Length: 312
Image 1 (spheres, rainbow, N blue to C red):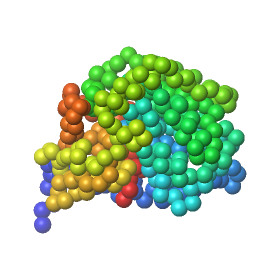
Image 2 (image 1 turned 135 degrees about the vertical axis):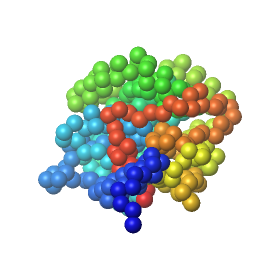
Image 3 (image 1 turned 45 degrees about the vertical axis):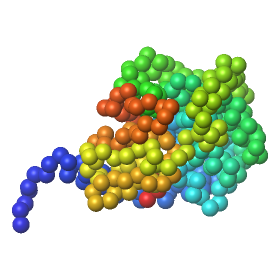
Image 4 (image 1 turned 60 degrees about the vertical axis):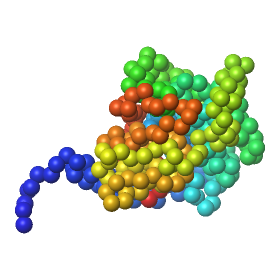
């Protein structure tokens, strides 16, 4: 039997991916229903987040601070008793086609919340337009009222339209810490504020939906096999199977295959170690401007996103 035989890079990455799955998945059961803090008292600040590339998770951590509790919507949506109580309850998520992702809408619709103060923060790349108004109405439709809604502009991760390399180099990123600090200060003071929606916001939103023909409530939801595919560079490491919030990837004969519901969050595309997952151009959307550019928030690890999103 050969000993100490070196392995090639392809095999090493595959082992690394499988090892990461093994270490991250067991902690998923720790999420559960967090009505109470560890000392048995009601949570002061409870934040539900959804994140595909780490932007919203990073913002959630800043707002939670040392005493807040973070819960992943990708995990909590499976809670059989989705009843939550805290002094403050917040939601942090990306803005998809100017509204919250469908998984966030579904989670809010199926859950019961009780708090003295509610807030939402949306992370966006280009435009947030009607997001504050949509969230405000969503909360009212489900039995509670938002006290505070704001947005933070960050790296735009929607690859059909934006070159991730250029986005990462954009000067707007220098303003992110200042914006997070301002939002955090407002929430700490329990300010009542909902970011206004302008006529220009409405025009941008209306023009987009009219030209794209997308569903106005669930614009990004489709079947994964129509959106993404694994190229020949795939080594079957399984990272895509664990970062997908719908569990819509599987490894067959050493190659990843997409099949099932897709949020179009592109977590699989951005987090593949081999950059082996590509987007299928769907008219009227163009092909990726930079096939080699991928993004994950520099303050968030791949293991963090596996812990947050894995359905295994």
